[in-house]
Image (tube, rainbow, N blue to C red):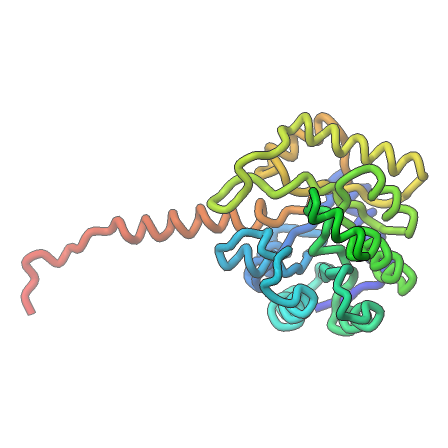
Length: 283
């Protein structure tokens, strides 16, 4: 396990980008996911509570509901399951910035001491809309709390990543010095527990384009990544990048859940299809 300073992470990502390769960040809900994401060439490995639910065969959105302490779960996953098996890749801790029961400055210190090289804002209220979202904003549990988390981490020279859902959020995160903006395009389609409805690739490209323009308008030097929605396969990502350039991609379900579902089912079916050849054998 290695931990890195903010500047070291930025330099690693710049080298990847300058080489002409897409920056690849991956979500890991288990140690074996993290181990082989690193072997496959992941540039960043993210640990978030949804990874645990996802790899337990449950929907990723379980990470937004009251099924456990998101911050405690992410820290425990990192310390005991992910960081011990990752050798060189920077590991990022996803933190619930709206948690009113924690001193986030103290929690950032815990995450750094554990060996994480940066932080991300998850669970995020950006995935919530309608009257519930309005109520969260009214009682002070809204997206600005996540912006404040990124600002706090940036002041402590931690590498920062942030999910954004619209132009305004992108400008806010860029304004506090976020290092990598992740355009969240919704729950990933595909597999047994993915979204059934999603933006199509062209609509997703328009969302990314709007946020890219917003970042340019404030002269932000941050990396621009995309995540989720219609991007289930490398071919989907290739199609999007032909429409709008991005620096990278964050894959979670598309990296660790969907491939595993198919591989385990196929391997099990292959073994289950074998016939006994013990006919006529006597004891």
